[in-house]
Image (cartoon, rainbow, N blue to C red; front, side, top):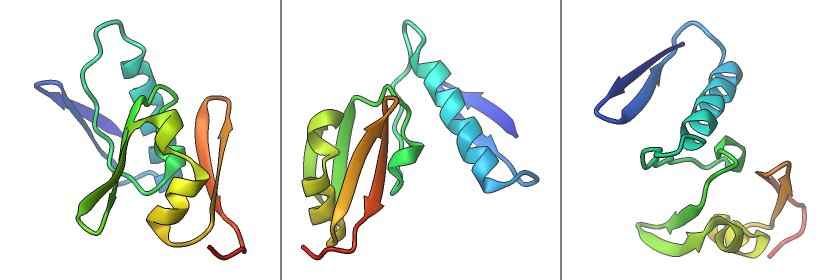
Length: 108
């Protein structure tokens, strides 16, 4: 994987390695970057909570072109709010500072 930087913008190019390896490497780089004293603002767009670094602090949930909710991660990344976002029952867990979500068999 090759990491490139241009004016505080970091991106990766990875055509030879597996996607799981690339995701893990990306999360690791983001966590190291966010641990810096004067880290840059980082914006992550994802459907997968497990792609978020441990230090994520602000979250915006978008649905159908609008903002469903926004605020601190602990208040926004909840089972109730993600169930409303995805129109199915989502269970959110936190393990070792990381968010994990799973879809349950129950209906809304």
